[in-house]
Length: 333
Image (cartoon, rainbow, N blue to C red; front, top):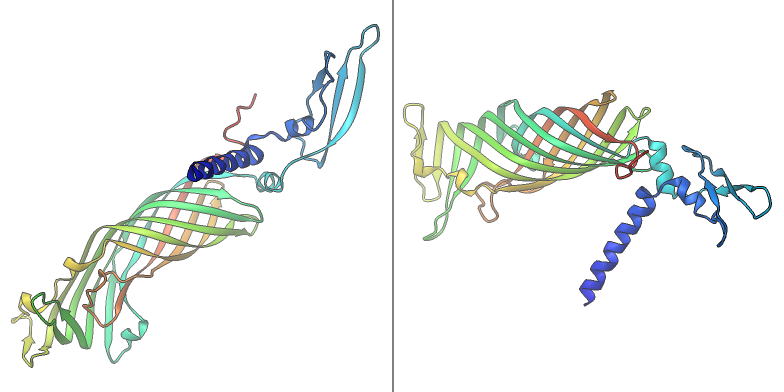
């Protein structure tokens, strides 16, 4: 019973807020503040002029009386708009739907960055230019703020060649103690990820509304992933004292290296920040940096001595195909 009452109360609050902020016409609110004919009189109300955005609006009320001419009353009624109605009206646009297309550059990188120090690891990476495509929704808020949400399909990946002085790999062993190996030399690294990403962020507009900076968070569901490491030349040593020389003519045996793809996780969450520039009224360009908070491997894998986090940059063009400058639920005459 308590849950039902809570649901009913929540629905009532939502409907009441929508009715007050969005559905009500300002002129009807002003007339409804007391300008109605008394009982028994055939009265007629002259609506307030539209649009009328002054803090004080003017209206007339008249009705005929038996044996006399029409009596008219001209009065002033203070507007009853809420602060949110005024702010949204001043902002010019309430809601906007758009599509965006762009490119992403990035992949998974070691974290903390100290693991990339010159005496331990060096990497020469060639980022892949992968496409991203999605939909966006923006609600304009008071004080130049906005709230946006997106649904984007994207692909990210890099090809890299790494030089390491003592990279540790942990090989899981379900029958006993895990085997730890270390590699010194050069290796080829290939990473590819395709995902559905849902960013939600708050923006702040300036420069007359043509520029916007924003900060937020994202959740991504990884549809397909590939992380392949192939030693090219070097030395592999094991915790039992054995070692393997790796050369182009004598590659490392498959069972001496972990299969990363078997233990990659299927989701990620992180933060993003970006800048947006309005080119023309419906077309804008955006630049964004995103960083994940969790390891790309499932918890407990412990393959590496450090975490691997998703990091990428995005450049995109967005087109607004639908905007609601007025109440979208109101039928205008």
